[in-house]
Amino acid sequence: MLDPLLKMENPALSDSAFDLDTVERLLTTTRAVRRRLDYERPVEREVILDCIRISQQAPTGTNAQHWRWLVIDDPDKKAALGEIYARGIPLLDEMSKSAKDAQTATVYNHARDFAARLGDVPIHVIPCLEGRLDEDAQQVHITTYYGSVYQAVWSFQLALRSRGLGSVFTTMHLAFEEESRQILDLPENVVQTALLPVAYTLGMDFKPTDRPPPESITHFNEWGA
Ligand SMILES: Cc1cc2nc3c(=O)[nH]c(=O)nc-3n(C[C@H](O)[C@H](O)[C@H](O)COP(=O)(O)O)c2cc1C
Image (cartoon, rainbow, N blue to C red; front, side):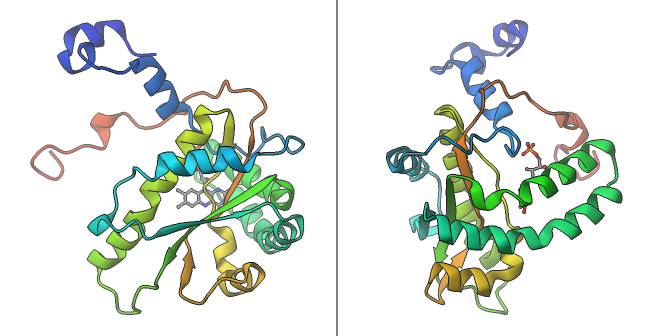
């Protein structure tokens, strides 16, 4: 919850047209949900479309909105993606053993356990881009390309959370991009940018996590200052 003193001292906060406590709660508690997904409760296609509707307002380079959403609720296709995804289990196990701190080790342990269950999550949502980057694409093109979908993805995840659903942003299946492309019968020029397993969450009481304070990662005017 926002510090009431901060609200009084900062006109931008006291004049806001938004319910800032709710907005802050949404932004700080939308977590990677793996262990509290409801595998039994079906997810309606309408709710997915509603969240996509909201994400359509995200910014895009050249106002293009080249993103497309592939929503998978076919059990066979999900199982096939789950099989590919589970190949990452030994790697996640290794990463957990050599993690730099306990929090990160826990994340890898949860990610490893979840990898065995991905195929059972009610819905897989795959944000895609039409058109591939050239092999010699410059930094500006790479940034614009991925920047033109990931902002919509995060809006989509926030919209899910606001409606009692959860997801995890995952990329591990892309280690087998070609195989997954064939499972999904995707045209060659369609690029998968993530795989979001989506389900209703068991409870909604997620909490902010420990992150470095803004002062420790922000520079004003001069790098290092
Ligand atoms: C680019 C990116 C790739 C990720 N890939 C995976 C993945 O393949 N599997 C997974 O379980 N989580 C994946 N995550 C989720 C992160 O593990 C998670 O966001 C992180 O541990 C922090 O947890 P939090 O989102 O709850 O704060 C990915 C996140 C990002 C941003």
